[in-house]
Image (cartoon, rainbow, N blue to C red; front, side, top):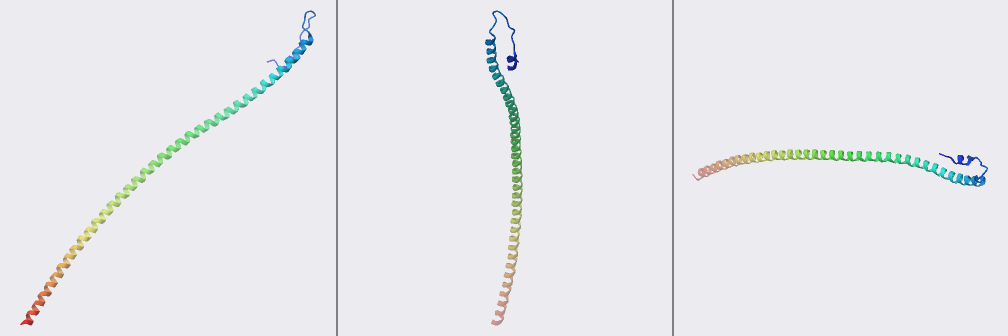
Length: 152
């Protein structure tokens, strides 16, 4: 690529006849040098800017990749937590059902024991009642005997 300095230092061979005016050529080259220098600097600045932007773009793409990985990891973790929670809930329900079943069985056993106690108590009451009845009958008979003896 031609630099502005190349344009400025360019010298043309001079012809004696029908040649270009040296002053006009020099003036034109000076104008061309200024314009080209301006374009050259602008081009150089734009290239630098492109490099900076490409670097920034690469940096942001790296961040984007990291964020995507983090998001996927967070989603996976959320799924795992959800699955663990479901399993724990199932386990808690299973334990609660087992405890409830055991409590029902225990209460059933306790009811049976109380029924047996009630039956035993009724039997004891019946026995006691029968003994009391027998005692009263014997006492009544004794009183009858005593009354017969007194009447005699």
